[in-house]
Image 1 (cartoon, rainbow, N blue to C red):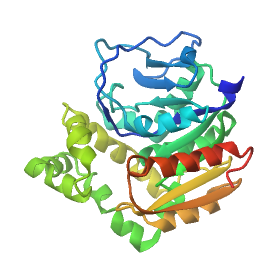
Image 2: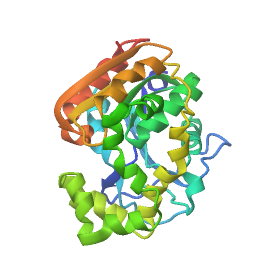
Image 3: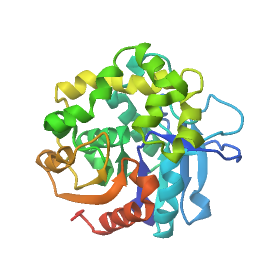
Image 4: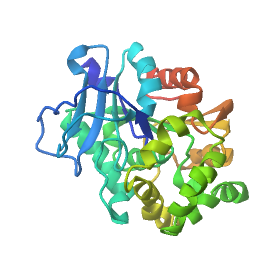
Length: 309
């Protein structure tokens, strides 16, 4: 029962670490299947629950990439006694990347996460999400509250708070409008050996090592942009429920894409307890740039029964 009570599921999107272990086949413990073939890392201190699954497997060969958040955060949480389930979401890593904007709606991707929990017989988990994964997490916290104890939202606040975040947030979100222009956005991002992409992300070390190679795979850049295209209208129409479980929101002071206001004001959209944490002098990719700080916050949040405060 301990492992069922102490589970983290990451719903982050970026991927990248290379490894050479062969992919396993997930045990068929449920009739319910994820809608797509998804790569899932499943790790804990107990070797009997470790694995790297390809759910609804329709692929073959060696895995090439691994979820970057699990590389830096998983060891910290595993050492604290947690089991960590880290899926590559649709279009990233070794998960399937269907063509078409319609496949990347938040509600469908959230259902993928629930299907993974069902497949692995996890009745309830502790939820963590960053960037687009955080948006998925907010949807899960509002629509599938019975499946999660609490939620740690990293960087991205509740979509209603994001949409009403004021001039500063709108200024920081300029790229979301550019991403709506199909073909043009892809060309601009690739131009000059990804010059704008590198400039905007301040030449982060992960760009050369993992992010650009990942997005350079055939069709993968368009898939990444389809997340923005599929959900732009939903954000503008405020079609998100309030979170119904305790939430910890974490924002970093050097985030180029997100204003602090959108996280702080998320408290208004949580029907339970809300805790806010600010990390100083760290950029958007807080899990990579300050893993120990993020890890400590998560462990502290998860360790407080019934409350993230």
